[in-house]
Image (cartoon, rainbow, N blue to C red):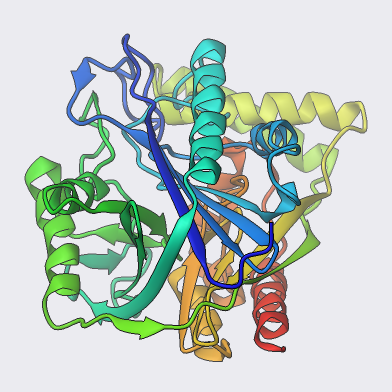
Length: 417
């Protein structure tokens, strides 16, 4: 259906588990089984349609979703949207939600719950497509300072800006909020299901009769300075107060366009001898440090990779899908399935041809941390250790450049008529 103006539809569905589930996000969380629900978690879907182009932006209160899961959802929606490639499914990356993808020794995935999430997400997207009505757009950009920190090097700058787009449709008002920070205020001690600090954003706007969606940005090395539920509330309220304070929304004319690009990012190679030495090393550590969950995870990784190496079945590259969405001549969203470092996020925004560039990390899959070349030299956990939890080898040092340049290429293509 061709629509000259912008039409918007929205839906929110509950994905809160009704029974105790293993929470994901921390190897160090010894009691991974949830003991209750602090706040309910959701999948939120926003449908945009203009001039024959229909796009879906979805956001789920989860740590991450695999590429296989995303592909299944897109396939199921192929008869409901002209191009399933126009579906962008993000996760907020909360570390207090049930496991929904492989993350070594950090919470087992329940097949039943994963199927439940799939059904609810498909339901949400279908409902959003069925709720389309004329809408107007406005945008604001503001900042919230002092609430977050670069966890790798506190002296490095972080991007503490907030970009928000407001959609005023006939039947709903939605604010899409883009900010970059790990939802880890609750820490590994927490065993309650929660969206973490985004929950307080949702709650604030809900009381105003407005639906809020949170899209996490280049938060790979950005952690909150605050902690606990009180800290989560402080961070969430700081974000919304900044938006409702000095940041004034400016009306914009919608001009929808979407562009996608798929690239291959190379992984480092590892020899059999080197891998065997790691396996022996972690086997010895397990004897010295019994019941150390981290060492157990490293041993599992080395053992499984050694077995695959002997069979010649070791992955050498990984597919990365970049999607860009132009909302207007001034506003665009660019996504990737990565945990981009703050410096890469700043680079992309500085070089973007758009005045307002929203970065949607954790979108259409999750493959782990992508860093700049400099960060590869001193970010040992992000560069070398974290890929093992995703069952991968480390990325090559130029991976950050490759991903950032691809994202900029998509943005530049969107800027052209």
